[in-house]
Every structure is written in structure tokens, then in C-alpha cells.
Image (cartoon, rainbow, N blue to C red):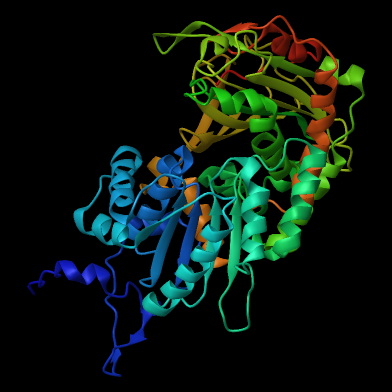
Length: 542
């Protein structure tokens, strides 16, 4: 048996894939090492390595960067999905130098990385992280940034390719984008590299503000350069929904008003606001989840098959769905949209405070932490099929699920049986136990005709035995590769706000319900159950 020679530690800095062949200084072509097979790569949509680039991270000292962005970048680096010619320039207001920020970044990785840190990969990753201090309203800071990025292109071979990631407060988006345009950091000169910008949510506070923000962004960047991120679209099960719908011939013929009774989409969180009371006071559940996550899931369930899997073809169909959501009158909003706020209670055996007792929350806050709504889609496929959406903080468990409830059989042939079979149901679990469940009736073995509802349950973990990538890993890699399929387009963001803004305006003109109206650890306010019971239905127990 041949004995492998151990790879020296310095080899981690060598080119990572065959795509990274480059000329050595002596002019001879050098072969890059081929990485060992990593099963984590099997879960990602694309295995192409991005071009050499600089990842410019605004808001580098914020919570989002620590929890999500840095761990995602490290994981992409660790699994050989980033190029050798790669740098991170982290921008923040705090008075750090490169060494002190790298120490903070390492602490964040130790706390939030989903895999244990490996000595050599984390060292080489952090060696590529630089810190750039300054305020966003400081013109000189952006001029120094432009000079620094040009220098990195020369010294590290990043070829002028730059991804600007805005992990800042939404109020800073126009300022940062305007400054980038002022110093010319948006320009894509022929042969001089690409420039892209990733904008975090929330994208605006209502339809008018979203339109204004789109205009401000459009003054600097072309639409094809803009990537509006919604991390739910990067989740493995959400992405598999497209494959499930359009890659399997047995389901698409049933996916319409003739066979579907109603659709339920649930996003349940057991956590509270986790110290982000000031943020949640400005957003609430409607802006934080309904306008983006829930409506994105609705669009993926209800959309028509796209002509191709091209980004614009896919997003064209999603926009059609959002434009087909029926407008609501103020009276319909009062009847079909429920808001709630959690009070003190018990979650997972632990006593937790009510929302109004959370840090940075007003003692008489009227901000909603729960929203449930019934929407109608006025198109040929879904006319008459209600879509029930709900999201809440401090619910009994963390779970996200799409449930397709099929109609009962037209003739109750087994009415004499002890138990009449329940209508079929298809449940797509987005998190935490990713999988797909199909419910159907089956005869119990024996001489009688007893019928029992049984489940056919598929789970990703047991079927593939691989670790699915985090949503931020998927979306950051897609942005680096220039694939906008899982990102929101300008008209899509405005269409979603067009659905939610009338609800917010109706609430602004009315007093809030008697908050708090549900205890932490319960499934929301009684009015949400009544919304379903009025229609002769009930929320699915998750």
C-alpha cells in the first residue's frame, strides 16, 4: 500500500482548485493541489470557484457580521470554495487596527461557527482580513478606501473585482451607496473587474420608501449589480421546493385550485428579540417577516413554472404571484389580518419576560411580535384557494413549514369505517428538521375495515448524510458567482411592499389590540385560531 506524504501546513496558501492555475514568478506554470473530497460541497448549488476579488464588508463590527457573515466566509474558505486571490476589507467605526479586528473576528468564529475551527484554515482566512476604520459620512474615508482597494488589486491579484456587502442599519444604505458612487467604486471598466452590492433587509419601511431606495441605488448601480438578500431563500429546503415542484411529474398536475383546499405557511420562533428591542420597535413582525420571508415562500409555492432557471425568468414568475394577491379593503384587513404581542410565560421549561419587559422596548409598546393573515391569489391556478400565513416570536418551538392541504375525496366511500380518513396533506419542513411529509389513509391490518392516517416522511439528514450549507454560505457564494436567482429584484421588493403597506396604514389609524394578547410559550392570540375556525379550518399542529 502506498504511503501518503503529509501535506505541509503552508500548502493551505497554495491554489485550491484546477481553476486557479497561475504562473509562478519564474514564468513556469505551476499545478495547484487538488483538495480532498469534501461532502459539504455536495450540498451546494454550484461548485465553481468565484473570480479573485475583494469582499468589502460595511458594518463589520455589528451583530450580523459576527453571527452570520464571518462564519459563512470562513466556511466557504475552509471548504475550498473561495479563490486563493481573495481579501476581506472590514469597515467599521471602532478604533481597531488589522490585528485587533482579526482577534475580534476569531472570537466571533469561535462563538458562532457551525463547525469547530481548524488551526490552519482559520489562520489563513484571518490573514486575508484587513480593517478600515471610518464613518460613513466621512468623504475622506471612502477616498482612502478607493486607494486601498486599488492597492490590493496590485499586491494580491484581485483583478478589480469587488463585492460590497451592506450589513449595516437600513438607514445607512443610501449614504453608503451614494459614497461608493461619488468616488467611482461602482464603475465596471472594460477588463477592470466586476462590482456588485449585497443589500440586507429590511429594504425600506413601506412601498414608498422602497421605491425611493430603489431610485437611490439605481443612481449608482445597475440592477444586475444589485443583490437584495433574503436569507430564507438560501435555505436548503426552500431551494429544493423548486426541484420538488418542477422536477417531479406526479405533483404539478395536483398543484392547483381543483385539488388543493388551502395552503398554510408557518414561521415559528421560540426566541424573543434577543437584545434587539430597538430594532424590533422600528420593524415589528410585519416588516421583519411578512413582507419578505413569508411572501417569498408564498411566491415559490404559487408561482408558475419558469421558462428557464435563469434568474430573471424565475423572478418574473414570483412577481406575477405578488401582483395577483388580491387587494384588501380596511374591513377585510380587520377581519383577515391578526396581530399579537407576547407577554410573560414559559418556553422550554424556562420562564421568560414579555415583550414590553425586553431591553430597549417601550413599556407601552404597540409593536406586533405575531402576525397571521389570509390572502387570496386572483389567478387561474389559485382562485378560491386561501393562503394562511403566520409568524410569531416566543412560540412553543422553532419551526418553519409549508403545508399543502388537499381537498377531501369527492365521495365518502369509507364512511362506515370507525375512522374516516383525513384529507391528504403535503408538508414541507424548512427548519429545523428539513424534510417532506406526505399524509394518506391506510387500512389497519386485520379482518375489519379500520382506517388510519399514516405518514410517509423523508428527511434530508438521513437520506443524504451530508451537512447542508448555511443559507448565508449559499447566498454569498451565489453573489460572488454572479447568480441572482435567489435574490430579490427591485420590482419584486416593491410588489411585496404593495401587499403589506395597506395593512400597516390600516393599523396606524386604529388603536392596537389589548397587548399583550398571548403568553410566551403558546401558539399566538386566540384571534388567529378564530381566523381559521371561521372558515371551518384549523392551524396544523407542528
